[in-house]
Image 1 (cartoon, helix red, strand yellow):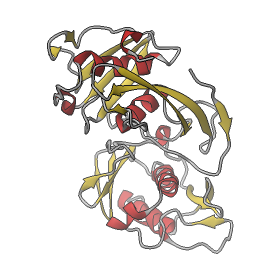
Image 2 (cartoon, rainbow, N blue to C red):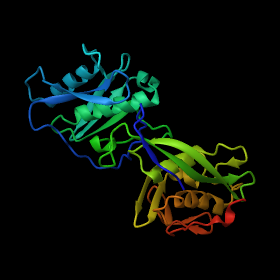
Image 3 (tube, helix red, strand yellow):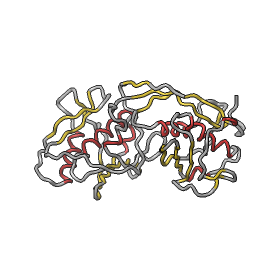
Image 4 (spheres, helix red, strand yellow):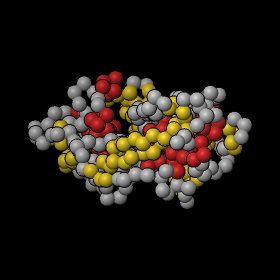
Length: 308
């Protein structure tokens, strides 16, 4: 389906793991910390040792000082503060092991690459604080979302490096084969899309995100109801498990039900490691999609609906 080449490009394209992921603390065992900055080209993050000015062991005091350090200009031209001017942490909540940061609206004005690097730097810096095992970001009172509108959710250091040995700014290239509904809604149209993506994101998630973004060609249309969000996707023993939100059940009867199902199944089956697909709604596989497609079924590739 695709050829993948690893590039060390000058950016990080970040899609965070689902909010259901577990937390794991990697705090320093000593009193020394590191603060993560952007390099002068703003192409990657770099760490610098940091000695707390406050010797208090109070968690709030440490968080306050590290946030201030990440918001302050540096004297070193090789380092750029990760929280840019104008972006502010308005408040934060710390409950048990989860640190939730609330940013002002200026956070949304950052470009996608800069935001990804800023987020990685903040998480890596604050994960060193004792008892902080995971973080979540809000802009105003709204949870931070990715470019597809899906909540970024809870983050740890592992949210930014998934593949062992990969660099945080390692970017890959792939040609995705995706299937959308034809103009009449009774067949599938194949599209090939070239994408650049972070090594942090799985291929199955990449396929689903691009499928939910819709087709590029005018001869095709959404098969999956517009506005549907991806809740989770994983692969085990050749089976891809896809969980979509309840918007998936919003029926568009101009699209045949088989076209909806096999838009997903055929697109994911282009990944060599996937042989079957199971679709659920918020994790629930009970019931039948429309009339003929039980959600509990494992569906295999079916190219009979694909137009030549």
